[in-house]
Length: 73
Image (cartoon, rainbow, N blue to C red; front, side):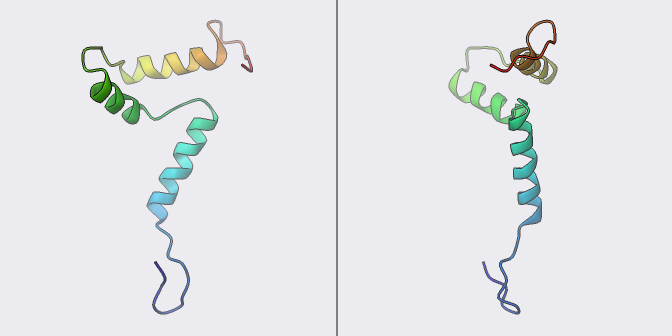
């Protein structure tokens, strides 16, 4: 949407901030817990949903391995 006064594109700063935050989390291997939980409840209702702490630990383990040592793949 364009601004009627100055014809500049209006920025939705809260939405932009949220998208930047989500992108940064994905780059470091931390997905969105709320999206994960919603997906699990919608697509896999018979299965348990990890707690936020379990989710964070699982993502860390996936990225760095069991011992916490860095791995690239």
